[in-house]
Length: 362
Image 1 (cartoon, helix red, strand yellow):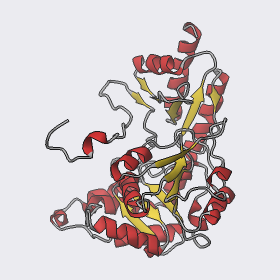
Image 2 (image 1 turned 180 degrees about the horizontal axis):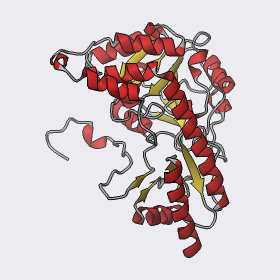
Image 3 (image 1 turned 90 degrees about the vertical axis):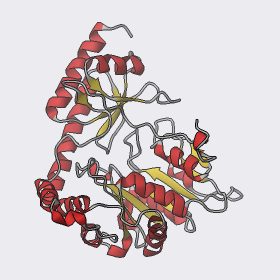
């Protein structure tokens, strides 16, 4: 704590990302990065953009990228808002949409932990809704009841993190329809790995805000590109906040790479399908080892073993230079979140796990 800090800084609860140690032969399955690389066309576009024009500011409106994304999703450029990764887009969403007369924000009790960090940062009270016994979101819990206190908005990840479970479009539509006067934000960071995007519901429900990222399904985590798809009125509000904070959020290299990635749809689909196939194979192999694996529509699996403590498994894997994610939180402390790797990565993980669980006591 410093005497130079603003009044609110000491009370913040910063998000803690997965660790990234520098270790030889490290197998990194803890941050849900894409096991295959970005589109070769995206890499070529980034190289081409690294020229003397970097002395100029990038397009503050990111018009080329918004047009490409609009065409990809079948919407208008006015429906697209872009930022430095989906986390920055989410920050603008919290600031622009959820600070409403001190009302709380309804969200799952187990979900992407950055939501709580942003609640602290922006002075928003979270109204936590417990997941069901099987760690899924019950859409009925997000329908307003007579006499229930109002909320500023609703946010949830779909597929949810860290569980990987997904809601159907019908369930999301029910939530949006029942809450017409508040924003319903659907964080779709993992949607391309097997779930349905709520973007298709925008024409019916103008309160839906779908959040996407280039970090997962487009394998461009190092580029930092994210975006929201929403009604023009909501996008205008996000733009007002963005332009009061940073008028040039995306640099020229990020814009070039992102546009090329969107245009390379064949590579995108093939890479997503490769991850899905690897996830299903990993699920089968972990099940054979005695793990209970939650149904996943993401590029990770959430698993628990009835005879082995998750914390001990996490430590044993780390000693073998394999990183997975362990959350020491109520209800999920006996689970590990494991990012899907290449078939070779997954084989290495399962071989080490087999050794661990057959040579150690529960």
